[in-house]
Image 1 (cartoon, rainbow, N blue to C red):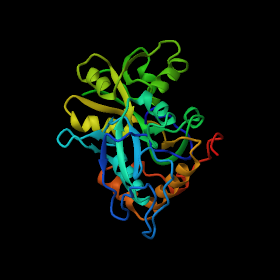
Image 2: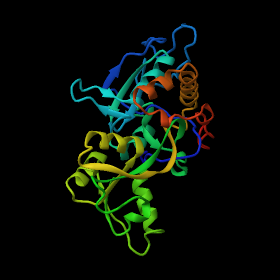
Image 3: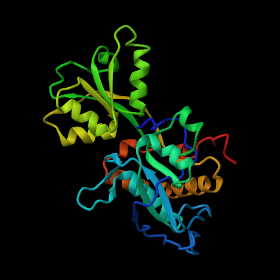
Image 4: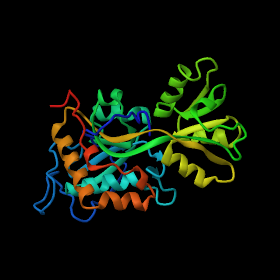
Length: 300
């Protein structure tokens, strides 16, 4: 869950914010339309006329977050559960999905600057984020603490990080959690928060023994541990489980509506569940009631 993995409590409209770096064909059930309009195929959701690129739903994403979004080193194509969910949503509109890499801190500014139609990047829904964009809920995760194998510092909970060196990606929910801890449970003995551009950079510091712990979204942390079981492990249970959303420009009411409808459609036909099963992320499945959130007050 990224802080711009900003989090909230229900889901509103999440627009596509990625410029076409790589494209994926629309999945079965929808065909890309050169004009950006839906074909007459039964069941297709009418796409908005405000697409950044006709016939394409453009998503911005920080693709350094496996298993949700990353770039396959062999094919150089985006892969992950978020990528497949985005493809399925686009297909429901009769569009192709396109993805463009952007740093986490640039996702929302890029969306609002109309560089993409929506952002899908494990964004944690929060009051702060919901004041900036409309959100469509699609997943939930927590925050996990990673430590060196054997847990030499005996860390099992947030308060155990007081006085410790902890690595974290910049502008994430985990960074916010550590900041809050320094004003609360670690007020007397602060956590030494070491911030890095990517979560991979933060985990490298842990693997090399340069920090006592690192924090990341629970599915991402589990993925890192699975890749390096001899050097790092999870410490304790996930903290602060909450929803993640697809971000959409709050002024783009047609995009929000189409995104909500498409997400509900892939939920109802089982596509969403099958994607989470494939990526071993069923624990992050949300109920249908969390897909449509209270709209951003700036939305039309």
